[in-house]
Image (cartoon, one colour):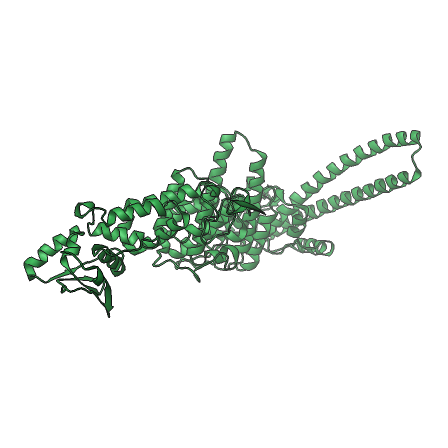
Length: 618
């Protein structure tokens, strides 16, 4: 049966489609609430699936057949193109409809067994000759593949399109004709921006070939993840893959870009929005895709992604992976990045200190492995430890003002980073002092246990000056501070004397030389003044050491008097450690709770004296 050429046209009336010809319709096809009144012969000659469905329908209903197409790829729009092709009408294949049309043809069984050059063959030829060879058409076809239901993911043409994109992304743009990209900046990774093969002289922005980041960020999450996996298999540089993953995450994870840059940053969902995005699954997928690289930008991105992961409640495996990777490059992180709020309903703390403690442990494990491989402590590892130490001490100072954090948690945080890796203890002392100020209700024993993590022999001169007059410190700790301050001053004085002696001998030899060479007299005046100033400084340090020694002896005498007043036998000797008194209670006389914490009059006079001549540590 032939179809008159003059009657080949489709008309729509409401939600119904009619093919205008002399013969009445003998089949009705329902697709997504759209009703198509068609004829059996054109459909049977091209569609294998419809032929089998019509045989069953005729057995049940007679001559008039009603077919219900469920989950047809591309919906009613794709079926309309299929119907036009079956009636011999001309259809236009484009990059936007090639995937829905191909999938609909495959769904309806439109192979060459039901007619030469059937729709599957024509769609495949157009896809291979036109779409796969052009960046824009290939990208547009993948964006439209979401309309073709989940079955598209199992088709080989999707993988072909993704492979084509990966090849073009890994190759110089000049091989494909410029410009190629749809949404990104027009710059060539070859170094100079080209237009129609002509160099414009404009330099490329940056070293990474990021021209395709914006384009591929328009793909759905499953397609983007598969594209990155294909690029990895092709050997693309990890820096390019990391840049693409970070760009995609900034566009499609709410709040991430705002935390990283404090502004809207890249183009967000105001102009483009992924439909029905599973943000939890997206975060877990991007963590798996991100290469293992150590860069400051990657570390900052991981910290932001960790925050989003905690908000979205991702799996424990994903969270542990983020913490491990951050810990391995903790020296590249910032203190602000570690200020992770606590999202747990069971915790009253403002910050998630447990997470930071785990990150520090990962850093220490990685540091041990690197030192074992290097067989010694390299200068780079020492600099890394110094940066991490400073950052951790700053973090402790920030969280110390949290009133809900107990002394055990504060001590655990302070001990998480070993004292041996801290070149100085000033940062840790400052953090503990802030904690004592924010928690005035701590008992003397709690303060002493907390301050035991300090190595008082590693404080600076300013820290010693501040600690010696710090009323928040227990008396035992203050005595230890005075003891180590004496040692510090003795060491500094002996070093100063050696320097002065060396300078004097050098000056004398220089004097003899200058006398012989008739050096101007102005030089001698400056040497005399420097020598006189150095002698004055040495005299001041000697007098200061003597004063401290006398004050220390008087304090020990005063402490012994206080111990006798509380029932210690006169014959017993109180043991001392580093010049610090420890009370040993007699078995028959239990000590009072405030005997250690109460300051003696001599100690108060010492503190008043120190306040007059020294300013507190800031």
